[in-house]
Length: 397
Image (cartoon, rainbow, N blue to C red; front, side, top):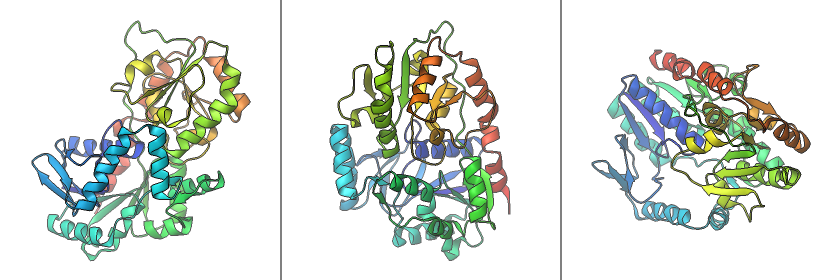
């Protein structure tokens, strides 16, 4: 049995870290492992959550069958507030969140000492083969005596000190404050195994934590080829993204510095996810589609994807979504970090605004064929390959 310690229920088609956690849990179940999720805090997407077959427990939860809800009035109020924010216009919700958090970006919240003590006691009772810990924000659990003899693995998703530094240099206020490389190293130090989401960050982690087993476990991607006879629409660009600060910052740069040069060229841009509604009035030719039930029909009709990100870390999972649907992506250097190197990779680098515009105009008509992108994800991001190191870590003594 495996214990997975996190602060939010994993789910597909959501933010990248939640999607990766879901893939790891789904893979563990496919491998025949029983998994129990220990949820620190009571961070539910709504006051009443459907567990969808997941075995979940936590100090801040109450459960009945497949339903869970916060155990305390403050937890219930927070879940209700999150539900209410999602019902507001995205721009207003973003402003209210920033005021509440007193920051432009919140990278994570540290689990409370009481929650960690509860998790340690639960782990002692469950006696799992291994414990997976989701990010440094729950890493203090590794100091508990109950975990000394238990195989453990810490999932990083990205290096938070790098993301914090990039956002601060861009002029944004970031929480938690004081998240330096030294502080992140201290939080990682007790982990036996540490997963990196991409090779460059794995190399940095080996420098930071020479005594740990560092492995790479990126997001897997299953090819989703377009239906026979499906035609891509020349001139249609697409971007998928939440309303997180790196996405909005990159889109603002794209719309102010690049989009004016594309007008009058028969080019349109579809924004999928919360990023579009969170921006101010969009220019002509740019459409905010919001959240969609099915990505495939939209991605199969697009000619190109864009990734105009200027800050961030980890692996841009949206670009794997583009590639597995057969799309080529025009991307900044920040967006390209960490992907498997391959001369046939479906990514076209663009350093500045002028390069970005030229690349779009050069490749948008006719759209590139889907086969190279599909072959790239099949060759580099199948589950057997991406989780091979994870399998070895889980069976190690």
